[in-house]
Length: 355
Ligand SMILES: *[C@@H]1O[C@H](CO)[C@@H](O)[C@H](O)[C@H]1NC(C)=O
Figure 1 (cartoon, rainbow, N blue to C red):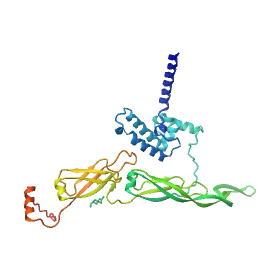
Figure 2: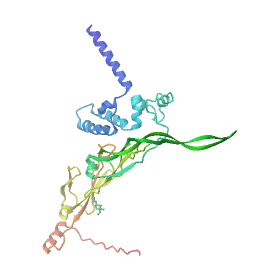
Figure 3: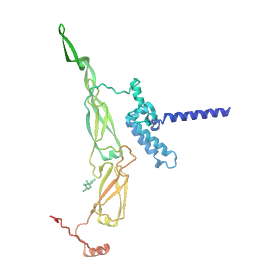
């Protein structure tokens, strides 16, 4: 009796495993988000989990690498609207087979009208204008990420008295001019619709400045742009504009900074800390002689990559030497010559040579 129960449990388990394999991985579950999650929520969930599940942080867990891989796959699919659509319909199976464009199932369902409400509307719907606004952000915000709230006064259509012409289109009309004589002509035909008026309404938009966003990158709010009386509103797009930073310059995902050191440090070596954009300290040690313009590279201390925040660019530090001014005493000069024990070598360069 007991053994038959355990057998059937085993059978159910095996069946369950087979079903799981067939159905592929549950990417929503892996990311811990609902099926209706926005791309933004998916990104946030991914970033949080990627930090937690990173194999470097879970060295004693043998399954960490696999879980991290699952997470990456889930993110890759759900953050891409096209892949997500395919996944929602056919699961992981649908994705691995062939490319997205030639998905045989989607054309099958499309042709037979099982469109699941996914089918794009072919008919062109008039659309209001897109509104583009510059959003000034600091390099610190682009490094660490931040949430910004913007109050927008959005014109919203409200019912009003009377009617208006709408859905206007050109139609061919036939007019009888006399017996056996017709005239066909293009004519604008309109419907009568209830009137509307636009009333500004206050709306709070929350913008996430995501780590690693780039200058000029646009952050869209679909349908928050100019309204259109007969169609859909345009989009509101915020354009990220990075404010110039006093100490750091960004090129791609790399950061550049300049440091001036004393002549003694340049010759004898030094240790120092550079305060980074989020306040953490970058420790620099140098034993070798530093010449003016010498450049040091600190990998992984640049900007986080937007697509994958776990990857960071480099920090390049260019050194300048603060030479002492004035004249040294004869004694010091003699000591220096002895200390440095270098032969004086002079190269006279005639900049006009060849002219
Ligand atoms: C560093 O110095 C160079 C040369 O003077 C300059 O072009 C560059 O803008 C400086 N970078 C920063 C971040 O101040």
